[in-house]
Image (cartoon, rainbow, N blue to C red; front, side, top):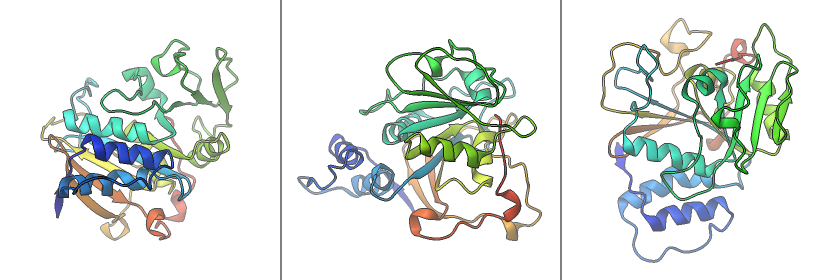
Length: 277
């Protein structure tokens, strides 16, 4: 059953309080069903008492596209889908993107459509291709991290994590281990589709959030394309899923296991899946 969410100022403040360990403060007044749904969706993502958590968010069209063939992805998500993405950024310690996304979109990765602080910005750049002046690396007081497979110097203030690539790729498991050691507990893998798929195949995603906007693109890159495709539907992941109406977009909130205490069903052949996009 689909639930409609409404993120009122009082509910969002309560969720931010959960993030800052002040979540026991009471709410005054009756909560609407839509407010309860918002608390149900975002509350568990804000908590810090359940250990590290890795989220992935992807916004796509009705036909599963994330951009046009030319790469235009600016309006794939509707305004409510965009606000949802910024809420996720406000709730995590760091946002992870691949170098292709960084080069093509030059994203700011900041929180602008809701109240909340900006997360650390993390770019996976195996070949060291990202220019130092790229938006994700700009100096604005927010932590900046680049995961590289080459010895390339970066300007002062940019943290460099040097990991050995394998055939031009860096293992998602190695990346995750390094980021945890760097003190980043709750992470959002935001793009691109190949980067999300790499972490997904490696069994490193706890919650996969997919927003679908009512637009048909017809061609262009798909949301998720794994490197090790399954042969039968019996092998497909079938996560427990809640469905929410955000307004302009529909959200599928997929629980991949850890938050419910279940072992993730990831085929052994996928444990070492890697990425570079």
